[in-house]
Length: 376
Image 1 (spheres, rainbow, N blue to C red):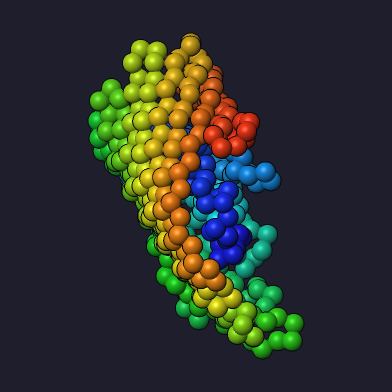
Image 2: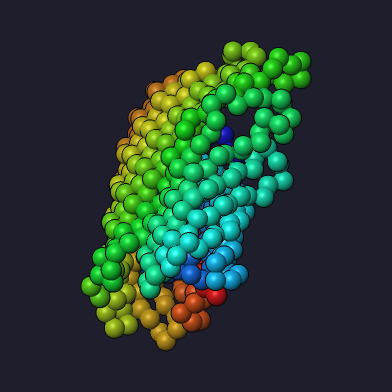
C-alpha cells in the first residue's frame, strides 16, 4: 500500500501531471466503459490498461470477470482486479468469487469471498441481486461485507478489532437505449483496532475508513454523452508507542466530468472537460493541509480506416494548489500535452489501443500507454 500521507505534493513533476495522466491521458474511451458495464454479469471480460507516469512508475489496471451458469439455479462468478494508480495512491490485488442462487427469473441471493495469501485479510459478502428477466444489462447488486472478519484470530500483531468493519457495496445499471444510469461504490463504517504492549512492535492502535461513490449518466442520440460525478474519502489513524511517530491522515476527492463522443461517417471527435477538488490533511509524524482545484480539458480527433482508428489529442490542465505545513506554498500551474493514438478493432469483442504522448516542456515522447479489452 502506498503511504499517501508521505506523498510530496510539492514535487514539481507529480504536482502538474498527477491527475492528467490517469484521468485523461490513460482513460478508456466512453464506448469501452459502456461495453464493460452492459455485460458485467452476462459475459466474460478482460481489461488491461498500462501507462507510464514517471521514469520508474507505471499506472496499472487489470480486470478479469467470469460469469458461468452451473445449472438453472446457480451461477458462479469470479472477479480479479489489480490496481496500481498514483492518482488513487493505491495498490490493490484481489480475487473475489461468488455463488449466486436464483430465486426467480430476476432475483438472486449470493455469497462472495476473496482468496488472500494473508488470512487476516479475508472478506465475506452476503447480498441480493436484481437482473431484468429479458434485458440483462439492467441490474442492481447490493451486498453487506464483513471486512477481514478473522483478523483477530489470524494477525501476527495479536490485535483486536473494537468496532467491526462493515461495508455496504453496490453496482447498478438502469435505463433504456437513449438514457441510462450506472453507479458503483461502497460505504465503510470506520473501525478501530488495538494492539498489546510489545518490545518488538511499536503499533498501539489503528483506525480506518475508505469509501467512494460514483454516478454516471449516459445519453445516446447517435452520439454518446457522459456526465459523471464521483466522491471518495479516506481516514487513517495510527498511534505508536512513541507519540512522535503517530499520525492521522484524511483525504477527500470530488470529481465532475462531461465527455462526448461524436462519430460522423469515418471521422471521430471526443471533447472532454473535468473538474476536481482535492483536500488532504495530516497530523503527527507529518503536519500539513493541502487543497487543490483543477480543470482539465481535452479534445481528441481521429479517423477510421476499416478496423483501425488513428487519433490525435490535445490536453491541458489548469490548477491552483495551496499547502500549509513545514512550508507554505501556493501555486498556479498549467500543463499541455499532445497525444497520438492507434486502435485496432479485431471484432466487436476485442479492441487494442496504443498511444504515446508528449509534454510540451519536456523533450521527447515520454508517456506510453497500452489498452486492451476482450469479451468472451
